[in-house]
Image (cartoon, rainbow, N blue to C red; front, side, top):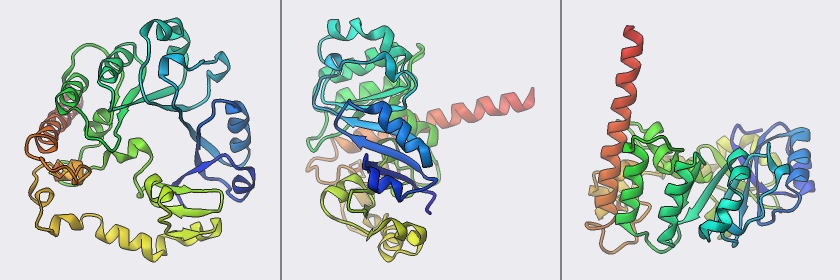
Amino acid sequence: MTDHILVCPFNKKLLDKIKHNAIIIRTRDFKDLHHIHREVNKSNALHAIKIQTETPLATISFQESWLHLPLVIYSPEFGDYKDFSRQLDLIRKLNIRIFLSSQHEFNFTGLRILSSLNISCGLFFNEEPPNWDLLNDLMHYDIYGRTRHAPIEPFHWLASHYEPAGYTDYNSVYFNNPLKYFHINEKEQIALTETDLLNNNYIDEGIKTLDTIEKNKKYIDFLNRRYEIMLQMNECAFCPAFRICLAKFQNLTDKKNTCKSFFSDFMDAADYYFSKRNTIRNQLWQL
Ligand code: SF4
């Protein structure tokens, strides 16, 4: 079986065919989280439960019984602070990361609140481009902020995995990096990303094919062609921040005053974080 982490729905028949793998369960339901935890851990290792909800964060009914479950919640908006604060003590005890949509501007404030309360959190992007100024402010807060705060994604992940001489794909925080994750549905169809799975764009079918997936032609093609956009004569190919953005916003018409400017600042921040990390390491070594 592959070393990739498998992202799949909670389906007993499907899970019975997978053995000794790390698994992420995706669900839209807050019911049965314990059942999922117990069942998946019988023959696999539950990496996380990803819950995609339409409920605002503040109105989710958090439970004491979720204390030791590895949870990732995707919610469209922060909601009312008063509702949120009533559950704050419990949320802070959970093993949780909370993602809010980049569509609502108050979410940028909401993420600062979560981070300052030491709750791991992040932003997820929709089809619509984000507010680049707010995004830049939030990135600065996460990377340069001196007050103690929990990581905000994808900024923290990218800064801490940044490869100054190579490419860094922050889609790992969304379980969407095909070097590390595969997405599977109930019919055992396998895709490189969640979007590919939704668009019926599969690389193979059948759990058994995971044993030899490294030889799968579509997977090999993906590995060989993933940076091909660099060879095309478009703006992304000449963008200095390509190696951390990887053309994720290539459909924007105005790149100069939007994505390019933000990602250039983000790359400076990643460079800063990288050199800070290495300076500290050198100092420790010399002591
Ligand atoms: S920042 Fe914009 S121009 Fe640069 S690689 Fe990303 S999408 Fe392309």
